[in-house]
Length: 142
Image (cartoon, rainbow, N blue to C red; front, side, top):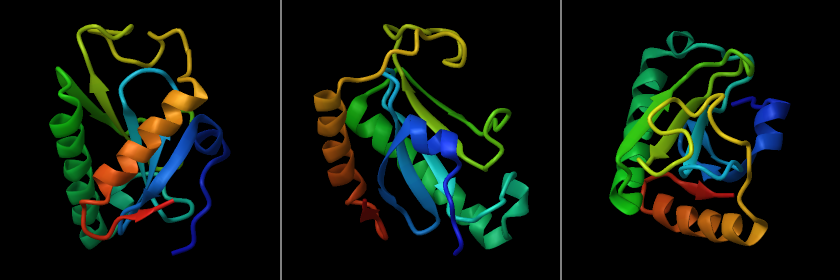
């Protein structure tokens, strides 16, 4: 697979590792955890542009990510979405939402103050996520 991560995704996230199809990223924003799955293909914009097999793989990886968030973080709701208005590269957001988060009950886009996790807190979360994703077949940590 040829793959280059969009510069904005690269700047706004930290790489957790790779699933068989997708790169797993953690948003630096201090809400969630907010994970982003990016299929590792260049110039891919829409889910329906994937082969049927890759669409199914994306769904399996998305469901595994949502299950991980639900099991280990106990959110009140998980928001999943593929918008791509600012970043055209196909990427799917998985955001653990809590009634106590800054944007609740609205969407996170445009409803947070943009604050980021401190480096120590982010690194601890990254290490925890690497361990948790390590339970999923085919995961390779960054």
